[in-house]
Image (cartoon, rainbow, N blue to C red):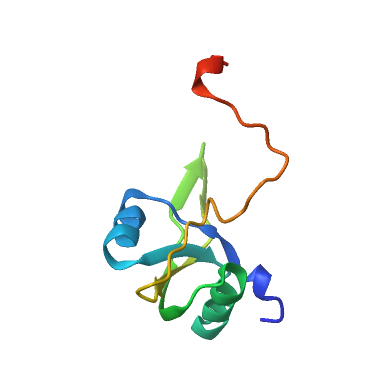
Length: 110
């Protein structure tokens, strides 16, 4: 991997990954399929500035789908579950600040 910012495609947010974050300080990411554990670890550490202790990867096979009479498959994709050190905290959605976003209060109605 030459570009570490091209390794991580995005966070996986499900009920199971939210529970993993609360219980064991683990974050799940969707990564490119040819990424290895070393590249994933260095990408997370450089992008978010946290200490990573462990990386587990899993290749999920694409599900068979059909449209009308045509059969096909979705692409295979890779998931990485990253374990953060005990004192590290990472909120993947609030780590990117938008400086010019207007604040909306619930009293505005719309």
